[in-house]
Image (tube, rainbow, N blue to C red):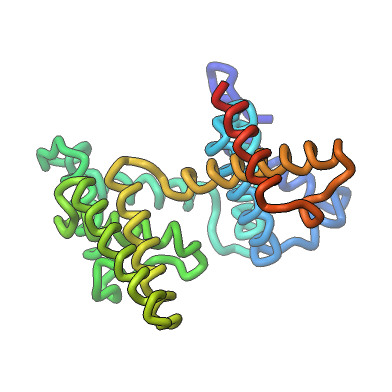
Length: 264
């Protein structure tokens, strides 16, 4: 394995490993893989990485980063075999892009505020992609609606289209909630669905204004919900019951107990 002068393993030290796995005496499964066939594994590892970030499991975070990096290098090795590009091409292209999009660091532009940096980044990116007619184009269609909403708002905010304060977003959330209640009370179910979308979009906006990642926030809540529901199942199991055979009042009482136990 290749090492840097100070003894640390380097990224390109993974390439020889990939070549062994892809070689004649290597792994049959690895030899048959293509960049396309690795897509689901890349997505899976990315989600596992997000889970580790949300759980603040630093040792797990290092492991998941390693798994994802290995898959990316594996894709690069497959591309090299096909004569498409090499690791050097990937790194060189990325270095050039980062320098180009940071003229306040590598050029003469004087910017000190993070918001101005984001605005400059989006403007440079738009100039680099002439086929993109709008600042809000270019998001991957495979992004979850939650992440895509966050990025749309982030891009718009970068050029000044943003609420001044978090309180303004909360007022908008109240407005959207009121419109949802009106649609429900009037029996307009289709309109209610649209109002739910507006409300969710506003909640994502509030998370962004507070500097929170809505994906991570929601994953925290999902994990909390799972823990508390597992507490309900365990407590009911001790009494020979199941959730489906219990009343809402019984489960709600156990939920509140789990909530109190967590706080204590």
